Image (cartoon, rainbow, N blue to C red; front, side, top):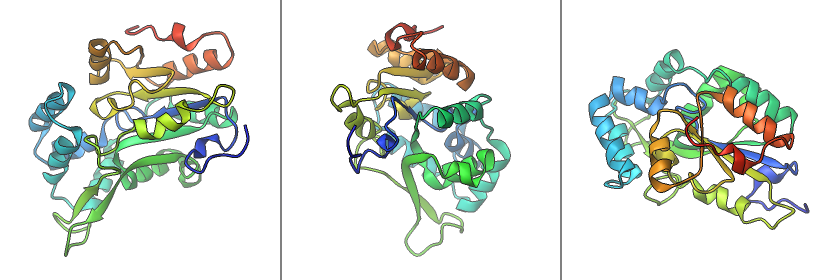
Length: 256
């Protein structure tokens, strides 16, 4: 495959498959950003209004998400502490992570959330050493002018890019998708909601969490996908594809 382009770290081990995935509500059973908004910010009702506006193209995700996070005045460490007590890992992710590591399938987390929260949760689930093996491409967090992130109203999100998504996940996937035949791995993506709209059309097979907004978007936009309830379902499908028993086209069965 030649040398690895510097912008494509997932090619380092010459994999035949790369698994891109959302974090909140996909690797986790709950969305951490939704949780702190509902419990420490302006609440579920206002948040859901913003999500619906994004889903139907009336607002940019970036603006609705900023509004959510601005409503949270708790110090940043308090937010992390609350999340560590309340956010749980998808029941099948740890097994999937182990299988992927043993079978040279890099996992790349593409998140619309904030890396310090993702790192803290992954270290809690997997252990510090294992969590450090996962590539995370996400937004960050910083102190507001004249404040510390660990005082009330002291932090804000720093977006990954200038897009309407705040983090346009397609920008990370497309260089892999553009590789020439013979060098290009099979690409997967798993997601659940409005932060995944930028990635939905970019890979060979999209896994969309059953009952969530991404399924509705895919059906409306005629994007092929396969639903999943947990990473138990994803592992079974990816194993079958890796073994040559199932094609990505045949796997995209929609609601199932």
